[in-house]
Amino acid sequence: MKENTTAQPAQRDLRDTSVDVVIVGAGFAGLSAAERLAGLGVSVLVVDARDRVGGRSFTGEIAGTEVDLGATWVSERHTAIRDLATRMGCSLNPQFDEGSNVLWMAGQRQAYAGTMPLVGPVDVQDLGRIQIELNRALETIDVDAAWNSPDAATLDATSFGEWLDQHQATPSTRALMYIITRVQWGCGPLDVSLLHVLRYIQAVGGLDHMLAVKGGSNEYRVTETTQEIAKRLAARLGESVVLDTPVRRISQDENGIAVHTDSATINAKYAIVTAAPEHRSYIEYQPALPAKTEGLTTSFRMGALSKAFVAYDKPFWRAEGLSGEALLADTVPAFVTFDVSPSDDGPGILMVFCTARVYDGFGPDVRRRLVIDQLVDLYGEQANSPIDYIDHCWGTEAFAPGGPHPAAPPYATVNYGEALTEPHGRIHWAGTETAGEWVGTMNGAVLTGLHTADRIADLLRVAPEGSA
Ligand SMILES: Cc1cc2nc3c(=O)[nH]c(=O)nc-3n(C[C@H](O)[C@H](O)[C@H](O)COP(=O)(O)OP(=O)(O)OC[C@H]3O[C@@H](n4cnc5c(N)ncnc54)[C@H](O)[C@@H]3O)c2cc1C
Image (tube, rainbow, N blue to C red; front, side, top):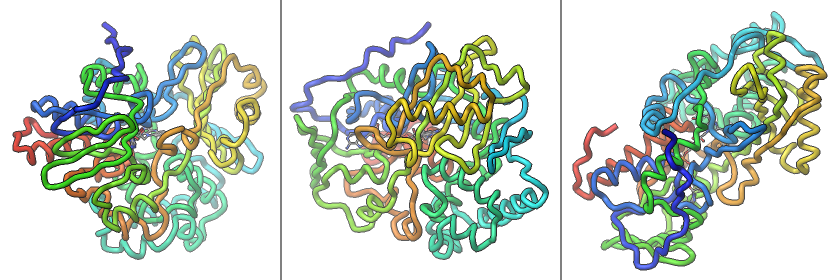
């Protein structure tokens, strides 16, 4: 039976509200923390500035089919989000991965098999060499505290792009690494520190796991969409979730905490803030945040990624032996495609990652034309006759813009990384950025919500049951 997730608890008079714990953010971290605490008999209130739950998970609709505008994939090893999905009655289906992939590079189209394209003998060798070097550096990373890794200072003193230069990566290797940074951190290799890149890769099981479909991070999609998991969880939490309510100020003293919104002050014993590091700075804190946390909020700036979806009558590329998976190495705005069609019978839907910097500034008609032209390069003239098109630019979200992840520049992780999790008095931080293992994923978000809830439960002297 489909759960009623339309009963979103939007408006509620919060004046004179007093709870044990206020949770800022109704993404996976906030909702998971709320469910855990509520299950222990702790009174909670989740507030989100947006008019929807799910945070960086957001459902769109194209050609009558629901698609993930934000977070999409779950791996076999993402047990926390998988458990949550199952409990919420959502199911997983494998990412379509049959047939050849396509590489577009230097104006040439080439079909290939496997995760990484065969870009010519010299480049294959070079890619292998760079991967070996990266894997060597990965072994030194402490995923729980990357800033304490043995070579942290050196690794954080350089950008990933500079490191590729130092290792004389060929243009093809660079182009492929550029794709990885754009899709993971919504930025180019020069914008992100090597230590930050290594931390994220190591925390999700290595480069191969990060990039692979079968046996990797992109193995499954959630049939009902990832936001639906959050909607169902929020529906169960009922009136404890309030939307359209930005938190503006949090003040605290030895007696408790006061969370100020535009219309009310909510009194609590503790607060859990799940906003991404940059978005923590939207809130004024009394007393002020320590310098390290301030530094974190100003340096861990969100990258930006945009996603377009193009629908056709049928997934016509499948009949031509193509998987719908493509890498566009040196062209913009589209740089990756995946087949997210519900079935062979149609509609055929291509999900297209686009570079925000050269995409978001155009109007919708130009954006659509640019993407479809690139799909024609990849999949031929049939791609010129779509039946529907939608897109979502994460960098232009009205509140808490950006994603998938912060693009931390050199020196930020070593100088400010500790502040990711260091509580500020009665304020505790959660959210995927605070995770060790699985940082950046929905799985990481759920885990941080559960762990932070358990810590608060301890502080409230409530015994957590079956801690994750
Ligand atoms: C395009 C894209 C693709 C992605 N793909 C994947 C994927 O395939 N697999 C995967 O596992 N992950 C993916 N991710 C990452 C994943 O979405 C995040 O890791 C996860 O959703 C983060 O959850 P969270 O609860 O930590 O934070 P969020 O989902 O960001 O939730 C934080 C919430 O806090 C709210 N907030 C912030 N400040 C305030 C305030 N002052 N007052 C009130 N509310 C506030 C925000 O509105 C937001 O809703 C992707 C993300 C994006 C953007």
